[in-house]
View 1 (cartoon, rainbow, N blue to C red):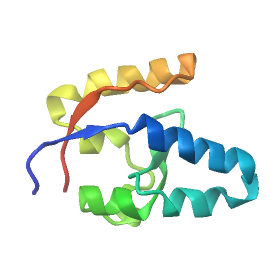
View 2: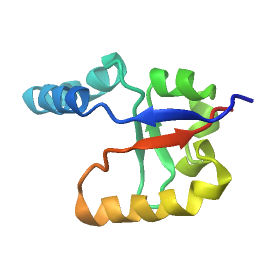
View 3: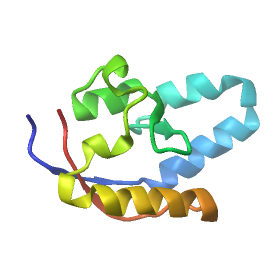
View 4: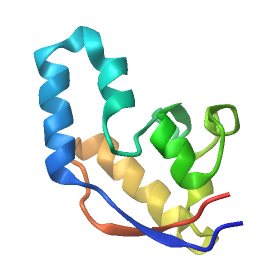
Length: 106
């Protein structure tokens, strides 16, 4: 068990990564794996569809333990509904929510 920690979205690195993907859409997987960011992609239900190595290292899980699980498993229990609601809002608004979040590892 790792105690809760703070996580923040690095908007500059996120922007750089999006530009790299736009410049070479065929290299999406390489871009996601080589960025220093911990990246996850969730489906519309909030379940992990993809996680990069940095994400696995940050939270202490293997890919196999994360894929198919709800992303709120890395959020303190008392914040899970809020995060699920914000995920639903993100799907509608299509805008990243830049804040500091409390998260927890395995």
